[in-house]
Amino acid sequence: MRESWAKLSLHNVRPLRPHKARRALMVLYLYFDGLCEPKNPGGVATYGFVIRDESGKVICKGKGAIGAGFLGDVTTNNIAEYTALIKALECLREKGIKDKVIIRGDSQLVIRQLKGEYSVRSERIKPLFQRAKELLRGLDYVLEWVPRRLNEEADALSREAFREFVKGKEEEYYRYYGKRP
Image (cartoon, rainbow, N blue to C red; front, top):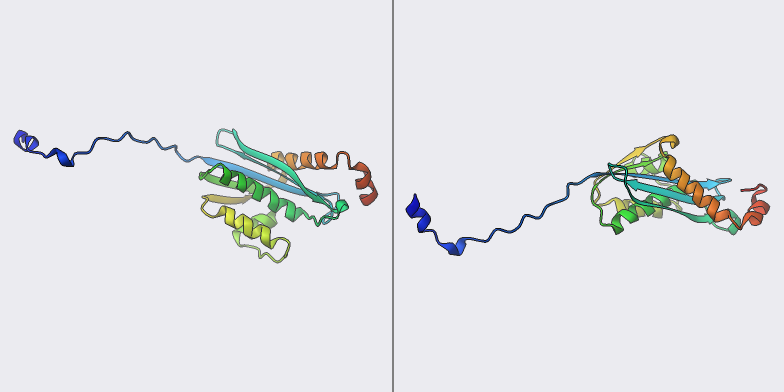
């Protein structure tokens, strides 16, 4: 046996490379919500989302306003819901996150359309649906509908965005909708 070891040629021996430690994939939880108030369609449309890891640490969160009927914008709750999901998925893409994502929202329409259970008939929704599908490509994800009470953080972010948007526009809001924000 020793002779065979001694006769080994060293030209085929490669130095050991340090092993690159790979981070284990974790599960992320993405919650999204949109609203259009005080009326749908034509209200103030806003969105909110939060993405947390398994430990509860916030990976990404966001909120914003899409538009308002009293400013001449075409707004619906479904546009707001899709926008919330798209903004959350864009955040994942920007961060290069490829972990498994459990996507939860309280919009049955969005969840069921993306699962292929409902068709997309609205011309306003089709481009949003296509963008969401494009962002989902390459992700390991599960879509889950949840009741609003289990989507409180995203709901609170969309409501916060609503309050921030109408601040300073209360008179225009009142003239258009006949009520205070």
